[in-house]
Length: 231
Image (cartoon, rainbow, N blue to C red; front, side):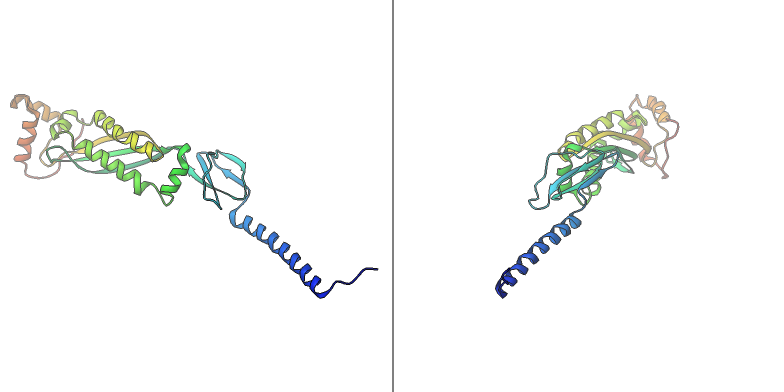
């Protein structure tokens, strides 16, 4: 014959049972809050993960496909395929003359540094870092040569592209990005400067001094931007 539990024992029993139920519900609630124990990474993406409780980052790179993860792990996905930005603007040469230039930047994220990118640029990386670094490097490179250099080069700015890339390579690498290429193209020269081919021909009358031709045309300009064509 079984003995009846005292009121105190009944209270303790219900308290223990309630605690177990609460713990189970809490566990499922946490799983629902943190997400699925399976993470799916699409092609062209990679992921990095950190621990919910400690905030520490693991060294694993989550690659395309299905991966089982701990309920305590949160995975952050980023595109690692090439990304392209294009800008057109007015850049000063060494002598202050403004040149209209179109520039294109191609880059991608370093999948081995995604945790660094997430910690430092989780709210976006183009405007806080990529674009300013790119524009600064381009401006500095263009300003390193006088207008006559660009007149003589026409639209072939391979050397300037290499200078910009040299300025960006290490800077990008430090922040978790890989530079793929930089492209520069002259769109137009300042007011009063004619077709680059004509500049070269007319320079013969100035003792082959291209800069003298450029200075003369700028000084005698009556206005109106002349777009370079056929160069």
